Each structure stands twice: as structure tokens, then as C-alpha cells.
Length: 358
Image 1 (cartoon, rainbow, N blue to C red):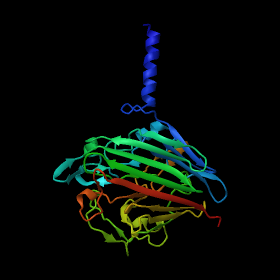
Image 2: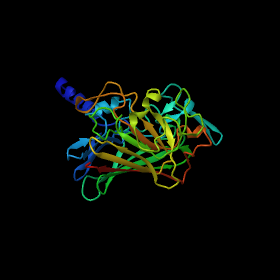
Image 3: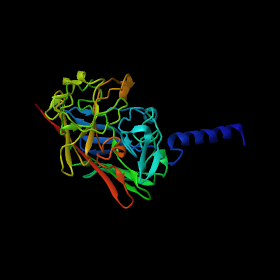
Image 4: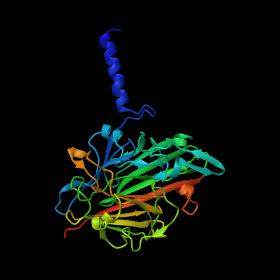
């Protein structure tokens, strides 16, 4: 075999490895679902939302989530921009828990604790595209992943899916489903879009108005692990029961907001939050079936080069991650995140965007 042919074969295999995940073999692609002037782009790498485009009050189309221009940048990302989170979103203290008399030691990836499912979790793997309808009356994409027994230390095999769908006009539906195949295991699926409804490149979100429909939070210890207490927000900077600017009291919180709220509603589909940006006229209303929501103000996004070369800084976005309570596996008083074989897990989220002309 000539050296030229050998070089071409090597080049082919290198390109193949760059395009496909070495474990699943699924090719990494970008998919768009579109309904009129409303569109969402997703990649099967981490089941990640990479853009959400809709008009402002002047009809100008803008991208309202932070992100990157290339898949390589998502591979190197440490902020979970737009990614699906699992097997357990948020933190597990000491990266360990006991279930049915068995102690499980997990993969720690934030000091001694586990964050967002471990070193890979569900955000650093390639998902399989099961169904994809790009446009028409009901555009959607469904992605699936099989999490093996022992992955990141978790017990049992779990099959998961997430469906992103455009419902009606300016409605984005996100539905997570999971089944434990052979062992009881904690499951707490969420995702991590960094929202700036003024536009990803419009600066900070401190002047945007937020209302969170939760009168309690789960306070944290020095390692950002819940203490187990559920405390009222009344007379604290965490009180967003009435609409307030994000920056109105953020100086009272070290670094910025990063806390789980216990939602008040007892309805299956709970009202979570409303975000409004006066300059663009965009408003985002969130409803979900989860009991909690993590409010995070991008405190650790520092000098991060994003889409179009725009550099993101702290408070350049906000996250409202609907979820089970963090570290629920170690706090019996928190809503359980344990799923047993034969039982289905479903977590639905609905984002409704409106454009106010005034």
C-alpha cells in the first residue's frame, strides 16, 4: 500500500472520529424546527438547544439563548450552555447516596460533589435522533439515550428521551421521559438554556423583570449543597413573588443568584416564572410539572467567547431550570426523585413567548 493511500485512509478515519461519537457511533448534527418566524436549533450532542429565534417588538429577529458557533466549542464548554442534564440534574452532596440498603459512590466532578450527572452526564454524550419533523403545523424532534448500569456510579439501566416541539405560535414544549429498566434509581432530568430575551448579545439581564411563583427556597451550605431546610423568601433578596428587576437586589447575594425555589402550585402543570424585557418587548412565561426551579444568573460566565465572537460576562443571561430538588436523594423531606422499574418518569416544560408592542 502506497504512503499516499495510507495517508488518505488515516485522514478518513480521523474525519469519521471527529464527526461521530466514539461510543455510540451516532453522527453529530444540527437540527432546526421552524414555525413561521419562530425557530429552534438543536444538536444531538448533549441534546442541546443552540438557538431560539423570534422577533422583538420592531419585528427584528433575535437569538435569545447564549451559545457557540461550533460543535467543538460545545464539546469544550463547562457552563452547560443549552444542554440536557441527567441522570440527576444539579448537585448530589458528597457524590453519594444510599438506596434500599445499598450505598452508591458516584463520580464527583465539582470538588467532592456531583454536578449535573458527573463528568459526562447526559450533556457530553451523543443522543440518537428518533423522530424529526422540521416544519409544518407541528414541528418537533425527539432524541433518545440509553444510560447503562453503573454509568457515573448510578444503579440500573435507564432509557431517556427529550422532545422539543413548537406548539401554536411562539410556544416551545420540552418533554423529558425516562424508564428505569432493572433497578430503582434517582432520575431528575432538566436542561440548561441561558436565556437573555433581549438577545444573546444585548448585554446583561439586570434590568429584565422576573416573577417566580415560589414562596420558599432550599438554602445551601458552603459547598452549595442544600441543608435540608425549606425557608420562606419573605423579607429576603430571594423574594420574586411580585415582578422585580433581576438587578434590584442582586448586590445582596454573593456573586449572584444560584438557588432552588420550591414552587407554590399544587397543580400538575405549575406556573414557574415570567421574564420580561422592556427594550425588546419580549416576554417569556414558563410552566412545568417539576416541583422546583433553579434560578441562576450566569455568575460564572466570565470572558466567554460566544456566537459571532460576542463575549459573555457575568449576568449576561438567566437560567430557570425546572427540576426536582437538588440532593433530594439525601433529604427524605424533599420530593422523591427515585424511579422504580415499571414506573415512568415524565417532566414537561412549556415556554410561551409573547411580543408586547408597548
